[in-house]
Image (tube, rainbow, N blue to C red):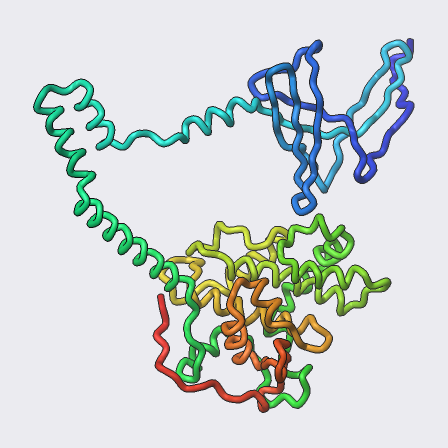
Length: 387
């Protein structure tokens, strides 16, 4: 027999095709006589695939590794004919489900130190110890004591809710804080005579970043809508309108880049953590994430890359401006923005005012206007910026 192996067939991997799976079992191996089944599930919003293997009474679960950059193939040789076949495969690392059960069992609540001490004294203590525990339990059910504890609990809860509301509360928009508002609003042309001249896109999103998002825009346009890692229904509808066009224009691909940027801004607006450097703002590209961390971090904060009300407000005004720019008529429904950003309509209208957008008469539709025609902000109490 010739030592040379002849590759007879090569099977190419096709999209959405089931291929053989190589399974690696953590702390174990699958016997040759074991009965098992493989189940793959794919969520519409989450492209991650999961594998489930049932071997007797044991259940193994794990993620199917699917790399977008390269495919994995194995070569199978027939010893009798010395011919080989190359087939595509996928890999899965499986672990026994018993580990998850053990983790859940370890997370069960345990008795507090005080409760455990009382239980030990009551069961194994002497006469004095038992009397002490009985008196303590009697005191705990006393009406006055219970009322006092309830009052303290309610007051503590009210204080915590007040602190959370203060953290989420955006400052008042008025003429007295014009200097601060200028730092959170994109630069615009006050002398513009046309709506298209109000904003220069480069002042809203850096042109250097847009130039580096060509591949991402093409990938988003070519991907099925349900597989895109964008949670906002508003942004998904904007992408769908572009995908439904027979021949997308250059402006359409530019709008997709802006939508990618808006998706990261929306994540920042919904963020409640104080640090942005370890938070995922965009599941499409890190280029946008890094740019937003640099541009929207509070420069006056003590910590690096800190999120404050300044960051949230600046992201809110930029999101409203981009929502107006990606629309052909430079308008957007305030109800849609309120739902997408989880912010009240009144607050959306207030921040739209400072970016030269006003609602139509008897309508909830915000439209971009010339700065010279926008009425000035009302004068109110002086705004004290929160750190």
